[in-house]
Image (cartoon, rainbow, N blue to C red; front, top):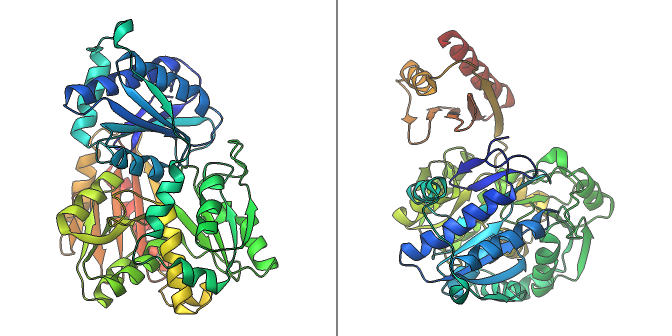
Length: 459
């Protein structure tokens, strides 16, 4: 299939023809161009790289390293490392940028290059376009032998990442240790199998049950941490009377949990609960993307602070958080961004903040979840083969509901008294994605059905 190029990286399946998959030729061109582009933009020649544990990772890593060395880059290789670990290392090591080799929640036959600037944040849309233009035109050259870059391996940076988390005022390792939690971890056989148990031990957790924590890239189930994919850990938590289950995706930037009763905490409510804790102790605004649960707005109102929405995509959320001076934010897919640590989705800091909150509350995880509403979210899409004007369809929907509050920064989001519906067009397929949320499942389903019927009529 065609390479997918977006603000979250350049990704594709392994194997195939150049330009139609993530082939060695594509990897070398993109990596070399990125190294040259950073240098041309005035950044220094150091680039930090790291990879998740998927089976193609070592091969892709070697190609990335070779390409970067060939354009004179100093490469610091973290080896198996989570996305947030690489992001933090870029800043700590004063690097010019970073490359994370991961396809996040995509299946094992996928891989990707996530590109970071010198702030350890994803490059923005314009920078991405400039880079891809450089790749397309091949307007860069490889260095001669005396000007090749240098390579070093640093597989210990995770310890530094964890220490930064332990130093946060809202993380209380002593309290977590005293709570004597028993916790199961499902890391889908990727780098979370290294990072999460090490973090838990540093927080004083002694009873840790590990499943799918061997970082060999053989994903034991669909790596997206949705309820239907986490049955094994849910049963383990319930059957062994554990306090909590922790699930992370292959690159550890999304956090999902299972309550002590074996029921999913709800990926949307990862950020809800952590935002509740942070805003209880630190005043400031809250920001999330348009497709995140309305429970976040309710949490902001509870604490008397403003809630802001951004376009979908981590780089957009980060931009809005900086603009609004948000003290907590993220995405409803379990992505927690805590700027006191760094501006990136980080499941590790999410775990530390959540466990501190759980310990302070003296509640069980199911009791804590019961504090929050149980809004229902529906995610659907409509295929529009032969339709070229997707923007026109979105505009017609906006006009249809002109009497309701509408946000058009990313597609169309219409807010109703009891829920909302968000429509976004795909950049790679003739698809409009439709998300809705309401206080009842029936209403959420009705919102999607209504929109789909209107779109069919518009065709």
